[in-house]
Amino acid sequence: MNSGDQDAKERIIKAAAEILDEVYDVDKITVRQVAERANVGIGLINYHFKSKDNLLGVVVANMMAEKAVGFITPGNYSDFEPVTKLKAMLKELYSFGSQYEKLNQFTIMKGIQSGDIQTQLFIIPVLREIFGNNADEMHLRILAMQIILPLQVTALCPSAFKIYSGIELHNEIQRNNFIDNLINNLVKENK
Image (tube, rainbow, N blue to C red; front, side):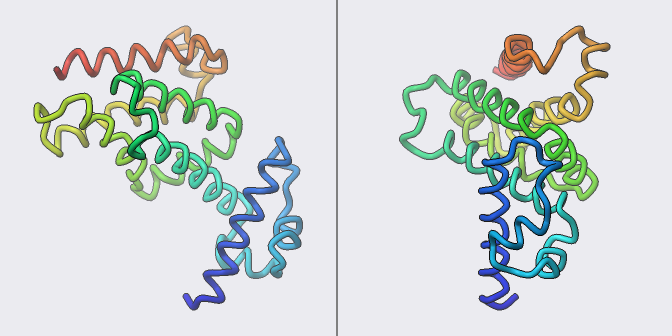
């Protein structure tokens, strides 16, 4: 991809992110709006992303990645105890994903189908803080999967999870209790 294509792609992502910040209902966002804001043709958006859902999925994934990086950046949240930091990180990411529930579900499904497990890598630095030298890299990666996969599955179908568990994930208090219990159980089992 030449630098002009890369620049256009970045402008498209930036424009879509700006519109996403302005419009709560993602169904109201059009490719034409994004193209106009990015000053590109609609065909270029289709060339790079194939669909509006793919584009918006990239934008939401990028926004979530930025939030996650904020938690693991040295100096940020350094006054948090590591378990508290992990819980806060997951609560913020889950809450953000809930704002764009359909897009989040699309992004999760696409990631699972493509075998993308990059999401787990964002929490490994915090797990390393929690477990120190008591866990090797493979153990940390498995723990990360044990944390992220249940959160992804519950985000895919919160109504089924409510039937199964009685937990209403759209209720912030219940969702936060679920995350607290998930982390507490895994930390306790592995310390």
